[in-house]
Image (cartoon, rainbow, N blue to C red; front, side, top):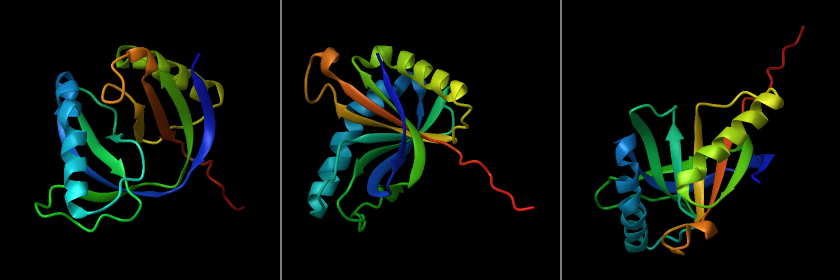
Amino acid sequence: MTEISLIDVEERPTVALRRQVRTDALAEFFAGVFDEVSAEVERAGIQIGGAPFARYRGVPGDVADIEAGFPLTAPWPGGADGELLAGTLPTARAVEAVHQGSYDTLRETYQALEAFVAEHKLQLQEEWWEIYESGPSSDQDPGTWRTRIVWPIEYPQVTSD
C-alpha cells in the first residue's frame, strides 16, 4: 500500500549537480552523483540538512533533465570548481507518495500517485523530486528502501469579477 497525501512543503536551500541524462543511464548517474556532491559539500564545510534528492525538470523521455544533490542547513556559498549549483526545493502545495521497496517497483507508486491526482482533479506542475530516505547505500535489502515522491500541484486560479 502506497501512502499518498496532500502536503505543504517549505523552501529548503540545496546544492546539486544538474545534468541531461539518458534514461537508460540513470542508474550509472545515480551511482556516483551523491558521493560527488557530498564530498564537495564536506570540503566547503557546509552541513547537509537531509536525505539526497533528485529533482526532475519536465517529463523524461529518452533524456531526463535532473538536478541531484542535498538539502543544506544554510545556502550554498559556492565551490572551487563552480559545477555545483545553489538552489532550493521550493515552497509548494504538493502530492506526496511514499514508496517502500526496490526502485524496480517505483513505477507502481507513480501510477498510484497519478490515480490520486486524477481522482482529486489536481494539476501537477512540470517538475518534481524524489527524496531517497534509505536505499542501497544504507541497506542492501531493497525491501527496506524508502523513496518519498514530492510533486507540486497548481493552485486553483482565483479571479475577481
